[in-house]
Image (cartoon, rainbow, N blue to C red; front, side):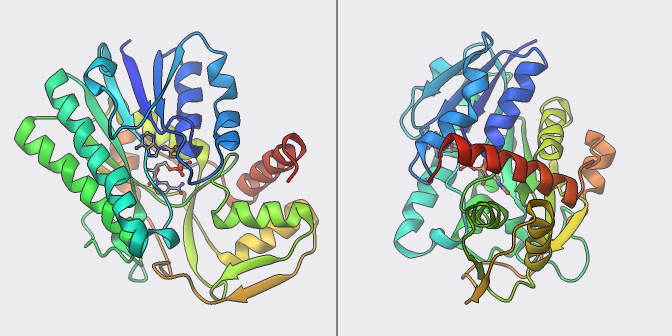
Length: 316
Ligand code: NAD
């Protein structure tokens, strides 16, 4: 079986994907720049298990200047997850960083893949390319309407994948993940913040009135879809979790699984935060055999257990 290159390997989704591929007996090269979006210590912990595995090699470096030709030697599949994430921070003076880390990196990678030959790329895109849903689930043909510079950069990178497919024959699949959660979730994401505040006995700050609704995808389901996409026909696929929850529902779930009571402080809505997301994952089900298996309460409980362990390992 050919080698897999995972970019963003020390991040939330990337590290789980690496663990899963190694468990499947695949050889994995991980690339990560340990960007300062959140702490290096957290990312190092994400890849602790993988680093002990003989099948794993971590290359620390930035996709903006790494020698990619050398890295792609013997690689049959690339899962491209490296990115500058987050809607709120993507405005204004930060936008050049989003363009560089989300768009320029993707172009550099596809340029190198185009020269390398028979390598397939799976690109991690986002439900944010749709903007808010219109009151029903959106399929892949739904119009794109990004509501933040982050979303725009993810959409631009999708276009790069399309361009290199048409003009250079690079086999590229686009996965549009809908809010992924579970152990190792990025610390600034809502559920992660709520859990760490609950466990530390601190008040929880909410952007907006708590009514924003998300299609929530548990990490093992997102990974399952990604592994399937590596081998499946090229295409664009929504990856939703089959469970929708408002921010207030998340807070209730956190209270239920942790038993903690905490103050909730509602503030202004964050710019670029859409009101609602709702996936039609029918295509992923038909082509990738994708079926999300983990519901909200089970998923929040798993994340809470991890968060409690993380706090013991690195009390803040
Ligand atoms: P993350 O920040 O935890 O992981 C991204 C990793 O990429 C980080 O470890 C970072 O250091 C690395 N990275 C960034 N720029 C790099 C560069 N130039 N060179 C090398 N490494 C670089 O984010 P995540 O939540 O795991 O998201 C992974 C991917 O999935 C991203 O592309 C994101 O846009 C997409 N996505 C995530 C979600 C979600 O809910 N988490 C939803 C939709 C899409």
